[in-house]
Length: 259
Ligand code: HEM
Image (cartoon, rainbow, N blue to C red; front, side, top):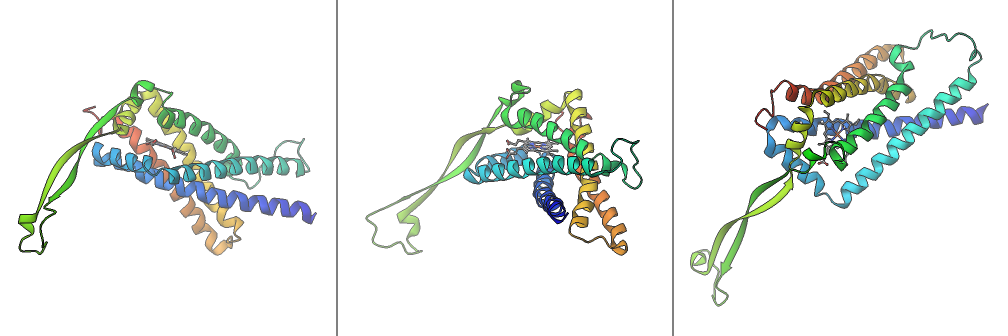
């Protein structure tokens, strides 16, 4: 009995820890995406900064992948365990207390996982709509050059102007035009609607996940739990809206109409 109870408790903790990692990433990603409203320069600069993180980017990616896999495998394990432990598994299903999104967690979760695979192929690998992935943007950056007289005996502030010459050159760089890729991608209504549906499912998932996390930690006294439930639902709404506002604004021509 204790052995199985421990399994369940450990599994719930794995779900909670990996869930927090995924939610932190999702929140950061949703906020990062909102930079599209600041314009092309802001979004492309942000994307280039992320791409330039080198090994840190790979550490983040591997961490996310491990967290996502553990989250999915543990959720399937718990679902099967609960199903097998149910005394009435062959009788008519009785959902007495479970609310709709708590029962559908496994399904919304699996659909989100399928969406993420599509999304990675779309915006990270570029194999979906490859014609939008190929765009590069040329941007300039100031490069400062200092010419100085190596024979000068003094570099004191008075004779600095004579000994050192500071020049500004513009250097051309190339970066991925993420702004154009996203705008052209979401101008396709089928793709936009697909993303909007996926992030609404994500919102449902998160609105139950946050309360479930607090329950796992044992913070489920009736006094606070109504508030936790409200907070959880509000967070789900916030994430869904923060994501869906991007394709919706592009579809309505509010941003990117000049692309
Ligand atoms: C409208 C919604 C979304 C937009 C506009 C969007 C945009 C993007 C873009 C442009 C990239 C590629 C960044 C780059 O390589 O420069 C990306 C990567 C990614 N997105 Fe999204 N995304 C959205 C929704 C989501 C959602 C809902 C999830 C997860 C549930 C998600 C998970 C990821 C992941 C895991 C990556 C790869 C990160 C990496 O390469 O390290 N995205 N997204």
